[in-house]
Structure formats: structure tokens, C-alpha cells
Amino acid sequence: MPSLRPFPLRAALTATAMTALLAATLPAALAQGGAADPEDRLTIIPGLDPWNVEIDRLPEWDLENSPPKLEDRAARHREFIQAGVPLEYRSRRSPFPASPGTIAAGGAVYQANCADCHGAKGRGDGDAGLDLLPSPALLGQLMDRQGAVDEYLLWSIAEGGSAFGTAMPAYKDTLQEDDIWRVVAYMRAGFPSAE
Image 1 (cartoon, rainbow, N blue to C red):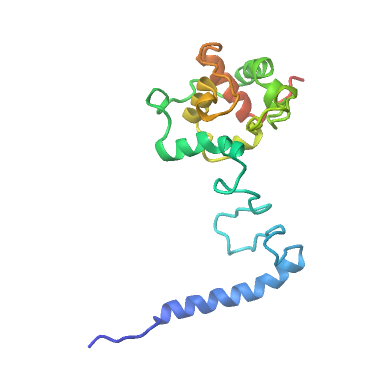
Image 2 (cartoon, rainbow, N blue to C red):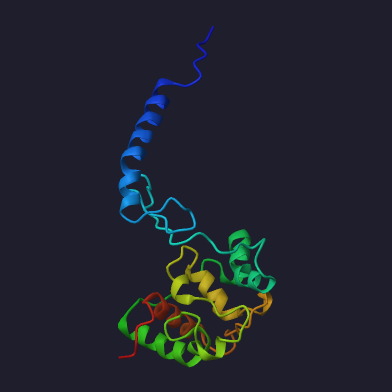
């Protein structure tokens, strides 16, 4: 008859070691500015977070409990996660290197077509976007996210946001695709100033 040990020895030793590590590091982390209250800033505890992800604050709202117009802000992203981009945009990649010339050209196109709503640094604070609901996308933060892949950015800029209830205009008939790729290069470079 097989042994019916409820908790294997290796698992017990691992759990004991993790508990000891947590007990040893948590008080020091809390003393250095961490907080036990989850509403406050969460602190990285060295060795316990393999991804080294820092969370500034817990989410203020979610899709189920958000005001109806703010749901539109996440509609394109939700579509991308569930179904990807439309076929015509799948596997599309920028043909341009991140050279100073490409970035400068993208900056000129961005300033002429995007900055009025998205702001000079992609913070969604352009004068024309102040009264929009949902407000313009925070492009500066979007560039740091995992979903900011070329095909998603091309689709977003080319098709605009009317299908998702936002005021983002479609640029596929206004800008050449090469100009859209230059704008993407400019945004990926961190919205450098013209100086």
C-alpha cells in the first residue's frame, strides 16, 4: 500500500525556507518605507519577486465597475488581447530603424497631427484633448507596455477609434503608412524634443 503522507518532505522544507525568508525580509522592507496597507505603495522585497515588478498603486477602477465612457478607453486593448489585430495589420513591422533622421521626421509628423490631443510628450494633455471623454491615450505610458507592438500601433493610428467609441481620428487616408511608422519610431524614442 502506498504511503499517504499529506505533505511531502521537500515541499515542507521549501515552505519552511520561504516562511523564514519572508519573516527575515518583511520587517526590514516595511521599515524602509513599505506599508502593510495594500492601498499604500507596495515595496519590492528582494528575492521574492522574480519579475522585479514595482506596483505604485492598486487599480482605481476596473472594467466592470468603471464609468461607462471609460470602458471605451480599454475596448481596443481588449479586442487586441482576445482576437488580435485585423488581418490586414497582422505581422506588420516597421521598416524603419530608430535612426535620428527617422525619429526627427516622426516628431514633425507627431507635432503636426497628434500633439494637439495627446500632448507634446504623449501624456494625453494636449489642449484639443482636454474635453474628450474618454481622454486621449497616454502614449508615453503605452510605449512601455508589453502590448505596444508594431501591428497594434499601426492598427490604432491607421483606423482611429470610432469603432471603439473614442474621438481618435483614422489616419490611413491622411498619412502615408511610412509616416505612421516614423511616428511610431518617435514615440518609441520617448518623444524627444526638437532641440
